[in-house]
Length: 153
Image (tube, rainbow, N blue to C red; front, side):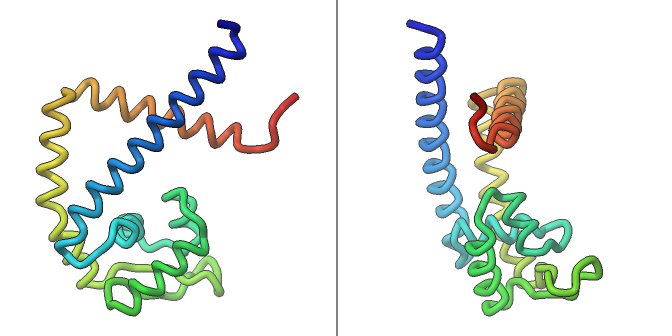
């Protein structure tokens, strides 16, 4: 197999497993979020603002989502009382999305199931392999970020 063919095959296999993992994570997230009345996407957006409020564009960047998609979810979360818009001292028009007490409570209800899954997954893989997987995925994500511009010739 030529070097170019091997690179293409590796990219294809990596892409397919990433798509599969995405589907698996979404299925798990839906299962954890549904009993609390959330969707995986709602949980994803709420999770982005657990520690600090962020503007919609910041959430989109952090979560790898579109700004429009996050805006739609953020508006629903505000409508449901799980989040609220607050003034942004750094940018007059880009309001910050912040968890409300009800939003924090919803996230808290997911925590036990999340912890149980985390414990089982780390027991299955082992702590060292889990950390190595995380580091590999972080490197892959960073490389794709660097290469996301126009192709080089």
